[in-house]
Image (cartoon, rainbow, N blue to C red; front, top):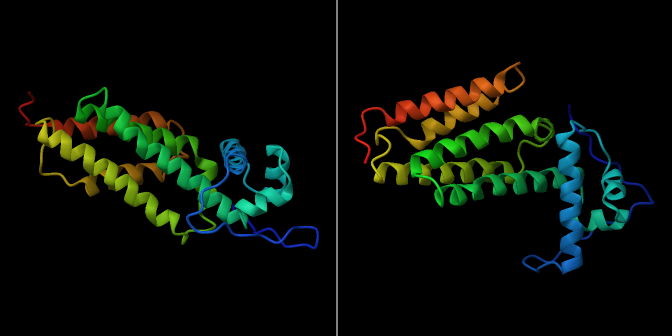
Amino acid sequence: MKILPVDPSPTKPSPTKSSPGKPLRADARRNRERLLATARELFLGGKLDFPLEDIARRSGVGVGTIYRHFETREALIEAVYQQEIGTLCACADELLGRLSADDALAAFLGQMIDYAANNRGLAAALCSIPDAPAFTAGPRLLMEAVSRLMRLAVAERRLRADVEPGTVLTVITSLCRVNDDPGWKAQAHAVVALLLDGLRLGVARP
């Protein structure tokens, strides 16, 4: 579903931009996080066609507040996406802290599947703004995380070295594009397990 931009009206405050690099005050930061959390809940619930004023009301802030942080609905969608991708990629370090590198890779790819399954609403919203800068940065961050995990696993002699991270990421992202099929999530996790079996094939594990 294409998300239409909110039409300006005399009752809406003019959007203002924060100074580049200027940190938000604590109260402004809390308001921004509350707005992002509300938008994310709506996406998780499958709701796509909502005005910014609705987000403000559900978050318990004024309309002027949301326009100070997000000039358009597209800016809000982009910010939610940035936050979600950042959270997903940050878990790579947490996984490495308690798992071997190959198991951390398996868990990370599994979390990518879970992310796709849980964020269908956000994925649909992204279709309305495919050229936003954040959507170029997202795949790059995922590639960095997968590359790092694979590089460490190869160094630990837990994965074969002749498969490129880009190949692995292509398999996972291709899986995630067909996540509306019944039983997709279980099948996708099975593919991840099969992929890891192939990556471990022939390696003399320590």
